Image 1 (spheres, rainbow, N blue to C red):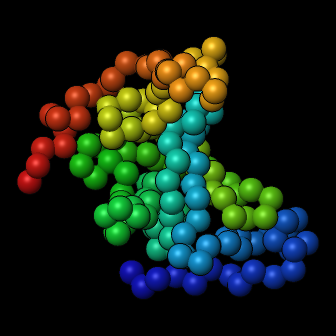
Image 2 (image 1 turned 90 degrees about the vertical axis):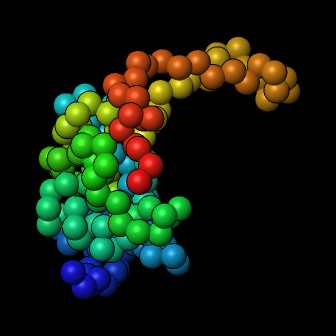
Length: 153
């Protein structure tokens, strides 16, 4: 697949109120993507896309991201089987953030085996003045054991 060219960005009124997808990729060619469960709206994960990942996501209806650490496209679930079937794609008002509403097949979005990457919360009594108080509590159960799923090749 050649790298797609999305429509050029036009006037702010067209971008903010128009009906044409005009994504704003940053200087590195990426755009942030928030992924939520299509039924519950629970935030599952945050990742980045480049133009190729966005095009593949639109074309295949399977969430595809750009892994910055691995410097390659990443089809969600390619190793774990926990795929994300895209039910809806939205953009924010100035089209510089993508929101995917997905069916989280397999029940886990996080590579650590949790349903959501946001499986910890900060203690309500935490204060920046007391670093020892900055405690995180795990709020979810693992769906799978990463050591069993991501075996080194």
